[in-house]
Length: 90
Image (cartoon, rainbow, N blue to C red):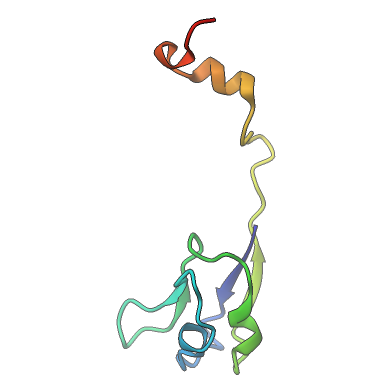
């Protein structure tokens, strides 16, 4: 999963990523006016629009790799762990 991340050392808190990028996911934000911007990893869609307009080159891409042992959708494992009342008639 590709996501944006802000380098706090390069960020000048200009709010360009928040305002001008018009992030539809509302991922870039700050908790208070005296804090630097940061991007909510879970809201970020990975479009990188904010990176293209950052005048300070403070936004970088990060890739979150999935757990290789994690199965997102395995019908058999899903059915085995499903409560019996949800399985229906077999």
